[in-house]
Structure formats: C-alpha cells, structure tokens
Amino acid sequence: MSDELEQASEDLVEKSNVNKAAARGPIGRIILFIQQVIAELRKVNKPTFNELRNYTGVVLGFVTVVMVIIFGFDFIFGQGVIWLYTAFDTTN
Image 1 (cartoon, one colour):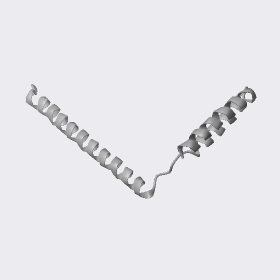
Image 2 (tube, rainbow, N blue to C red; image 1 turned 180 degrees about the horizontal axis):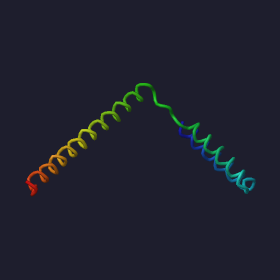
Image 3 (tube, rainbow, N blue to C red; image 1 turned 90 degrees about the vertical axis):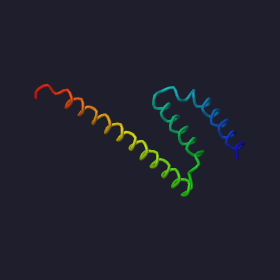
C-alpha cells in the first residue's frame, strides 16, 4: 500500500513539473492546484463508524472537562471580587 502511495506521489511530482510550463498564468496555477488537491484527497482514509464514535466521545469529554475547569476558575475569581468589594466598602 505504501509503495502505491509513494508511486502516486512521485507521479504527481513529475506531472507537476511537466505542468509548470503550462501553468504560467494565474488560471493555469489554479487548475494545477485543484488537480493536486484532488490527487491528495484520493489518498485520505475515512474513519470507520466505531473510530468516529470513539473520537467524538474523546472530544466531547475533553471539552466538558475544560468547561468545568473554566467554570470553576470563573466562579472562584468572581466570588473573590465580590468579597473584595464588600470587605473594603467605605460607603457604609
């Protein structure tokens, strides 16, 4: 499998070098870029449903943990500011 990918990459580089002469204008460069993007997208492996579910769970768990930590800091600092304003209130 890796030999096929290496060969495809080498073919892509050769094709790119051949197309450089033809891709002098902005339209030619855009077309070459799109061709290279499509060639690279063909190499992408899609995750299975189980992998996708696992990754989603990990991300949601991590976001929940970070959210709880930020809420805790916000609550503690908020209570500290309230205490500062009430403890040193000189208007009473």
